[in-house]
Length: 189
Image 1 (cartoon, rainbow, N blue to C red):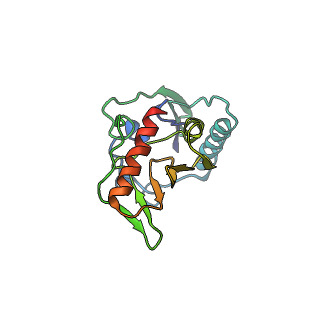
Image 2: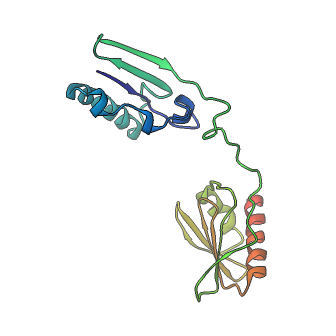
Image 3: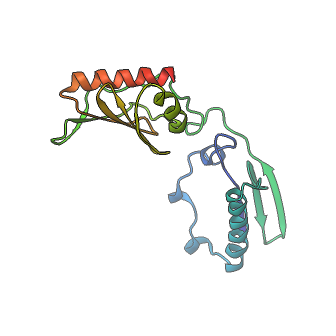
């Protein structure tokens, strides 16, 4: 006879870990142990659907950064503000300023192509990078997920999380040299 609704859009709002740190589904009551009235799920589900439609329609949802609490047993409804926890280990992790790549690479079998992954996930704006890289290098493909360009005779596929596929390299030394050049290019862009 109760339900909660919130729109969490980190980094603008707290994330779920900020609101319910250390939540473990195994410790929560289930429908079998607690019971559920069908009307409760219908009402809460309809409100969740409306908030989701607002997000998709770019309309500010009422529950963004707030927790709407519905107590149908008492017919009480409250909305409380949520705060970002500065020590949250999910949304408050600081991104490294420089991208570090490992020295051991993965090779795609028989293709002279090295797969280079960043040690820590990053997020790249490939559309903006396409413009800056395209000034000096030939862009072969540009999408929101991958940017493929020619870098000194090597075809580089750069993915939005920092992973690179570098074609036409003969060994790890050359692959790392090309990846360092691409990293320098990214920092200049």
